[in-house]
Image (cartoon, rainbow, N blue to C red):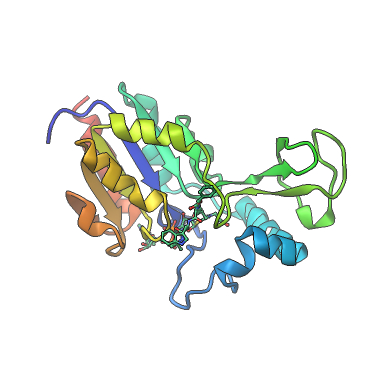
Length: 235
Ligand code: BV8
């Protein structure tokens, strides 16, 4: 493997599984009792905003009772000590990477602890219940807040920044994602196109496993700390 200077890491729900946060595609294909299209689309929100608000309120409230695991901690340590460029792109909307101390972090699908006001277009930290129609922390208007979450059919955040990082990285690592959702699922092919070495760490083979140079199967809580020590041993 060539010398590594710039790293891009993509994480998915699998990295938070050992913290007790539900993944999207459990055995029954339901997600916390709902079909994705019934709760994670703009159409669902227009059709039944109360159902969608309550779904996100429940997930937001659950954040109070979960904690970062060894994989989140290891990535935060790598972020702190890595001298080259590093971008941690998470598909997750939980705050576990943030609480573990990661700073070069990008939530491409938004965050549970953020509210987006459709009146003033402002985004604010929010950790309450949106179903109660609270006022926007920025413009004080009531009844205009939606979860600051990228739903299906909506454009993920900071795609240009991500694409630039993929073009410049020497190493692309994917952790705990099924590779089922685009554009995130296509990042490995972009990175590989630009000559990066690509590594997947996942509990099971993902839909994108064939695109990776290297695959390590197992739990993130075990694989990621070992991998971080390997990478830091070259610093
Ligand atoms: C867009 C926020 C365009 C919501 C999410 C046909 C072909 C290609 C694309 C499409 C298509 N039809 C529609 C599309 C586009 C669509 C898409 O890709 N659909 C799929 C279903 C085919 N994509 C979009 O709509 C995206 N937007 O394309 O916009 C556009 C263009 C111009 C202008 C405007 C718009 C937006 C997608 C974002 C949707 N939001 N999340 C919320 O959280 O409430 S997606 C959601 O699912 C996640 O964020 C994540 O991105 C995705 C996949 O989830 P994972 O994180 O991978 O979790 P999953 O449960 O699936 O897998 C967990 C993995 O972990 C498993 O592999 C498991 O083995 C592993 N694991 C479990 N435990 C562990 C573990 N690994 C390690 N250790 C463990 N302990």
